[in-house]
Each structure stands twice: as C-alpha cells, then as structure tokens.
Image (cartoon, rainbow, N blue to C red):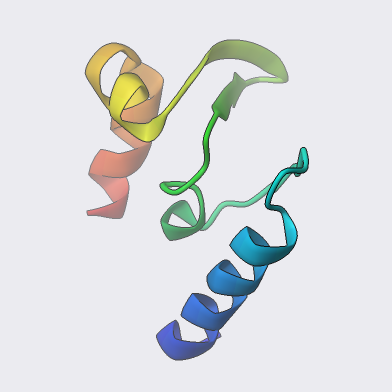
Length: 70
C-alpha cells in the first residue's frame, strides 16, 4: 500500500482501538512505533516487551530489526 493509505489505516486503527486491547501482528515497522506495548518474538519465544523507545534502548534484537529498516 502507498504511504497515504498506510497513514489512513493507522489513524483508523488508533480510533477503533481506543480503550480496547488490540493485537497487531505486522512486519511493517512503521505500524508498530505508535503501540503502547510491543512484544518482541524470536524463534517463537518472547524475548522482550515495552514501548518503541524502551526497546530501542535495551533490546538488541529489536535494534537490529530497525537497523535493517533504516
């Protein structure tokens, strides 16, 4: 999808998930930065969880993912 459509989807997701627990499973890193809590899985195991900022600070696996993205 193009970036404008992606932005519309993100806004809609935030609106409909307000005050609800919502699971978003994605490989699109731009989709997860706004999440309240991100779960990092590696080989099917939970290796860390937190906000984007927390994970960038302390989770090597998460930083590697974003290093490849940028």
